[in-house]
Length: 196
Image (cartoon, rainbow, N blue to C red; front, side, top):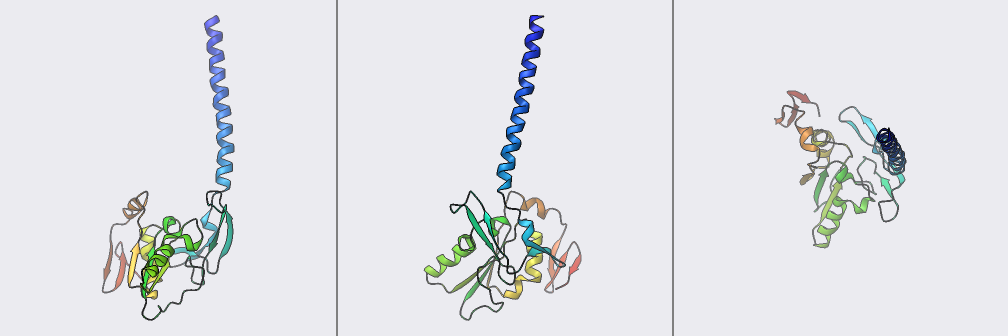
């Protein structure tokens, strides 16, 4: 009988501990996820690529992980993560670099802190006349990035295109498609021509 009571108390203690642990986990997740950024609200439907950044978007987002405790999410008139409007025609005597990617490129930082903008700053410091554009979109995969470049990115006539691949999920996303090809400057995905 004594062993049975001890076992019942141990089971009750384990169940109570599990319950308290779940309560703390729930509270912790609500606190943490309440401060996370849901990037979907600043994207807009696009019939060619599914969705892209809203144009001329500006929102201050509380973000405790950033040294300022927040960052400003800003897009220019074409939806690029830039503070100022980017002319589609590149500046004369300038090398234009277009950076495609997902959240690693888009960034949960001020635009001037994103790695495409830091790349531009460093290259200019070294004496290069460059124009580096951040075309990263959170949750894009290489397929979406290719579509975005096909419909929008090539209009910027970049001299160099950098495709940022995140190994955590992008390789899996690539496997979803059987064939991606360019024939006579036309894009085909799984045998279907993508209209420009």
